[in-house]
Image (cartoon, rainbow, N blue to C red):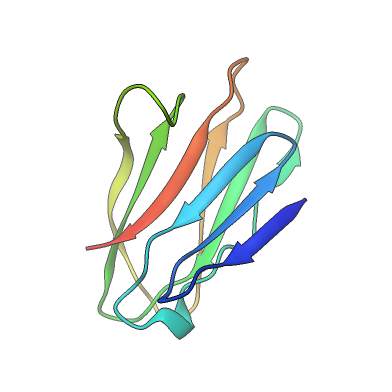
Length: 100
């Protein structure tokens, strides 16, 4: 696993060829990626969300060609950890979490 926090906020992690990225949040100190955890046919993506903030998780199969697709939106921050689950497919998938 390789991970890095980016200057100005945001972070990314690469685990078994899966890239997770978090854009710079409203308060960069409170958003971090603590997944994925691969188990069976599902993967969990977790982060700490600000209470009162709303998040969108997007996916992309190719970072060079094409754009990001919304996987889940309108995720309310609770001031604690937020976890979503996705089925692991046969193709490489990139994820990012965006603060709305």
